[in-house]
Every structure is written in structure tokens, then in C-alpha cells.
Image 1 (cartoon, rainbow, N blue to C red):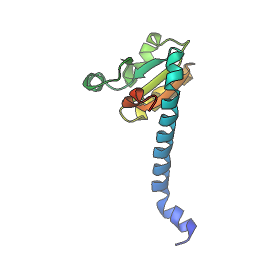
Image 2 (cartoon, one colour; image 1 turned 90 degrees about the vertical axis):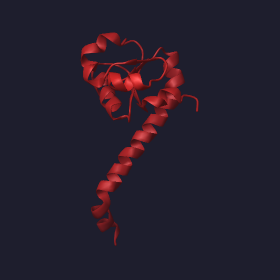
Image 3 (cartoon, helix red, strand yellow; image 1 turned 120 degrees about the vertical axis):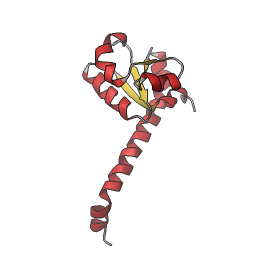
Length: 120
């Protein structure tokens, strides 16, 4: 099998692997930045549902479910970074984009458990 036919046959799997790799790399970068972001007064927002948040959450995080984010922006200060997390990093990725469009300095930590991994 030549390289062109390999990519033609397996491009969906390669794209999926690249997407997961990017999510992992991006979350690791933000985990490393967490101490500095917290020192700057970052707001830590968990965008999972109320029930998901109640079943387990990281200390110091506030819960604003993704579908409520647009209506609750007044609860998030604009003068400090915002770090968002969820169950897998997908909803928090959407939250990060929405916050950036509103002028926030936003970061996606990925899964909510990563809020507790700073310094690992």
C-alpha cells in the first residue's frame, strides 16, 4: 500500500487521533499555566450540568452549565482570566470560544479533574 492510498483509506482515523492529541496537548498546557492564572485571580468555571457538578467537582470552581453561560456572563469578572472545564473538554472548548468572543481571556483545562492537577 502506498502512502497516498494509506491516507485516503485511513484519514478519518488519523483526523480523530490528531483531534484527541490536540485536546490532550492543549489541556496539559493549561494545567501548567494554572498556578500563574490562579495568581492572576482566575475564575474557574465548570460548565457541566448541575447534576454532574453535584456528583463531584474541584474545589474553588463555580458551576455555570454551558447552556446557561450566555445569560450568566455577569457572574464572571472580565478583568481576570477564566479557566473552563467539563467532563471531556468538549463543552469547555465551546465555552472558551464563547467567552473569547465576549472579550474574556479564556482557557480550556479539559476535564474538570484537571483543575486539581496543577503542579503534577
